[in-house]
Length: 159
Image (cartoon, rainbow, N blue to C red; front, side, top):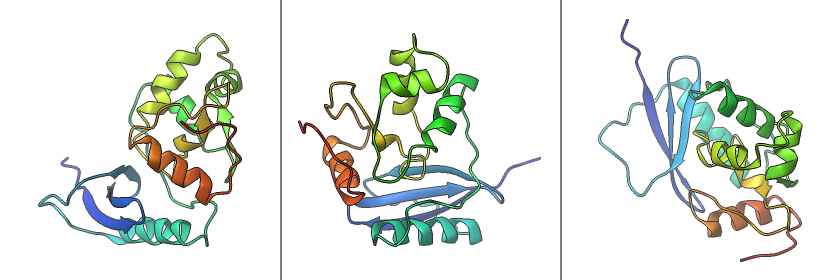
């Protein structure tokens, strides 16, 4: 059976965001530099874009979308735990490792966070270093800072 994918784009205050779904689940949300040739929306793409718009306008603090994670079992555990980090809150990589019962796996957790396929909705931007420094963000530190400030998160240090 051939799986059909749908794609739409949202012009956020931080740049273009690409949303990819199948019939039932959001599969990817990524910052991109330009649209590609394959733009075909379905109701789920439109709903995801609508919820992203509400988030950026300050009207939404939680997303209500069905997500499908494609990754290792370890990555999925990390991403599912990320979903529990509340709007405007931050957590350290080591604290996140502890929450999944793997205190010894801070680096592996950081690696999984960096491979999050569903940006913003799975809030990897809410993870910082234990010393309060920002840590990485695949879309760029300026976007991570913007997202955290948008949510009112208290940052100890900026880069």
